[in-house]
Length: 404
View 1 (cartoon, helix red, strand yellow):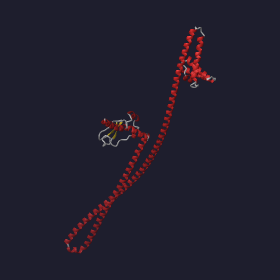
View 2: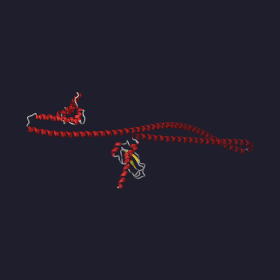
View 3: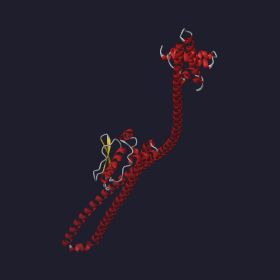
View 4: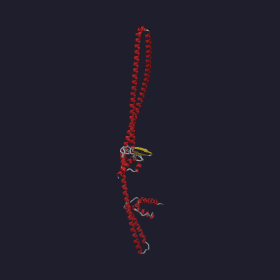
C-alpha cells in the first residue's frame, strides 16, 4: 500500500471517529500514533491538521506535545519495570531525559520553522491575492474601455458603410443618367448627320443644276451671237424677248446661289450643335470621374478604419513612441508581425539628405524603405513598422558614431 493510500485510510478512520463524537485531542493523538508508529513519520502541526481537518494553530502543537508526553511516560514505565541496577537506571533516566530535551528542542525548532513557513506562505498567498485582484480590476477596466472603443469603431464603420452605399447608389443613378444622356446625344448626332447628308445631296443636285444652266446659258449666248451676225435685222426684232429671258436666267442663278449659302449656313449650325453636345458629354464624364475618385477615397478610408480597429489610438501612439525611441527589440517586432503595419508612419522626407522622399517597397517576403536620392535603406524587414523603425534608427546610430 502506498503512502497516499495509507493517508486516505487514516482520514477515513478519523472521519469515523469524528462521527462518533470523539474529542479533538483524541483525533490528534490517533493521527500522531498512526503517523509515528505505522508510517514512521514525525508528527507535525501541518500533517496532523491535514488529516484531522480540525483544531487551531495553537491547539494542535499542544496535542502533539501531549502525545510525546505519553510516549515518555510509557518509556519510563517500561524502563522501571525490569531488574536494572539503580546506577544504570539513573544513567538511563538521565540519557532518556537528555534525549527527551533534545527531541523537545528539535520538535519546537521544527514547529517554529514550519509555523514560520506557513505564515510566510500565507503572506505570499495574501499578497498574490491582492495583486491578482488589482490586476483583475485593471483588466476589467481595460476591457470596458476596449469594448467602448470597439463599439465606437463599429458605429463609425456602420456610418462609413451607409455613406458608401449611398455614394454607390448616387453613382449608379448618375451613371444611368449619363448613359441615357449619352444615348440621346448619340441619337441626336445620328439624326444631324443624316440631315447633313441630305443637305449635302441637295447641294450637290443644286450645283449640278447650276452647272447645267451655265452650260445652257453659254450655248444660248453662242447661238444668239451667231444669229446676230447672220441677221442683224432679226436681232433687233428679237432683242427684247432675249433680254427678258436673260433676266429670268440671271434671277434663277441668283436663287440657286442663295440656296447654296443657306445650305452652308445650316451645315455650320449643325456642326456647332454637335460640338456643344460633345462638350456637355465631356463635362458629364469629368463629373463621373470626380465622383469615382471620391468613392475610391471613401473606400480607402474605410479600409484604413478597419485595419486600425485592432489598435486603440493610445496603444498605437505608445507603439509608435517605443519604435521611435528604439525600445522595441527584434523579438517584439517578430511577435507583432504585420498586425501593427497600419500605424506605421512613413516619413515625408529622408532625415539623412532632407531632399529625397522615402519609398516603401515589397521585397520577397518583407518590406524595405529606401531613399531614391541618397540610397539610404532600412534593409529588408519583416513588417512596415520594423522597416520604418530601422530606417530612422540607422540614421540615429550613424549620428551617434560621428559625435563619438
